[in-house]
Amino acid sequence: MKMTEEMLSQVRGSIRHAKNSAFYQKHFEGIESDDIKTLDDFRRLPFTDKDDLRGAYPMGLCAVPTDEIVRIHSSSGTTGTPVIIPYTQKDVDDWAIMFKRCYETAGITRADRIQVTPGYGLWTAGIGFQLGAELLGAMAIPMGPGNTDKQIRMMIDLRTTVFTATSSYALLIAEEIEKRGVRDQICLKKGVIGSERWGAKMRKRIASELGVELYDIYGLTEIYGPGIGINCDMSESMHIWTDYMYFEIINPKTLEPVKDGESGEIVITTLQKEGAPLIRYRTHDLTREVIEPCPCGSDYPRIDAIIGRSDDMVKVKGTIIFPSKVDEFLAGVKDASSEYQIMIDHMNGRDQMTLFFETKLKPGAERQALEKEVEQGFKKSIGILAKIRAVSIGELPRSEKKTTRIFDNRY
Image 1 (tube, rainbow, N blue to C red):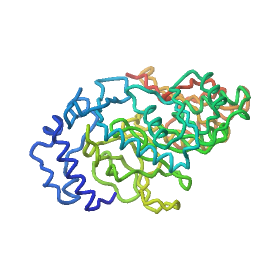
Image 2: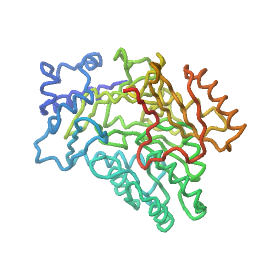
Image 3: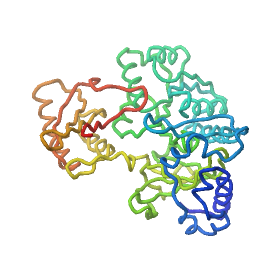
Image 4: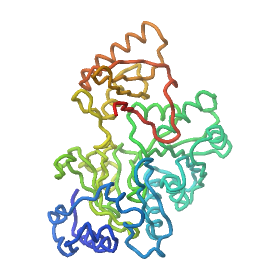
């Protein structure tokens, strides 16, 4: 992504400010902000990774006096040392501005009623969706996750027009609305979906069953939270707010910049963050920059929908497998649903993979034929022979948060 002179000046300011934190004093020892005169100088700076943030626990990232911190958030991971991100009032305000911009890009107005189902608390999601809605002037309905009966009742009684959720919970709600036969009682027009990667088939299912337009919102706790980018009506690619962040796309193996339009890992440098500025932060999210101008006319650059993470691949029998590739494969199988699970086991000295996927086909000859089709197609597309098990719609577990697709039982 191109760096203007203004951005370079902002980067120098961000580096200068970041060195007020204990972490960056050590991480950038011997590096001064005035040393960064060109993009090449910037690219020689060391990356920051999540393990660095864990090592800075609890407040090593804080770059302002603690009496200026108005809120703490933490990443949603359940293992290892937590990542603590402190926010000043300006950070909170800036985040709300970006989120409001996301809603406006999706055509959402103050006349809308926005039902917020992502989690609240240390996780950034729920409160971010709410802050943006309130700044927009829309009605926020802060439900949080779970209690599907109450979710649907509030959706009907309060005439919710916008639904925000993880893709997993959006699918669960869509299936419940269909099951209960209340679709004609809901007023939903749009859904804003984030927090996890989702495939085209899942998107079509949710949009069809809820009767809504869907928007893919991007963000991560370390960089404010959700709301740093969203797609518009004219494209499935997401506009990203480069007045607050500088984005790079690098090859996750060589750590060098990719060519324009090539896929790689997103690296983010904050330009205005006060509480916990981050310089060259490796997100491990994989995508590509969309070079062509957007038909909507926005000057904000775009990235494609996230295709996966550089650290969520698994290796089986020498073959590297990304969940996104399985999504793509199943999207081309007519009678296969979007929902699947992969189990990887080590038995009798060998790795064994089993793919479970949902289908509307009843048990019998047709389902068996579909399993054979998927087995052959999976081998050709993914490069590995797997056991294939077709199951009925709804048989695989649903989640109110993020859905785990791959279970590696070898370790």
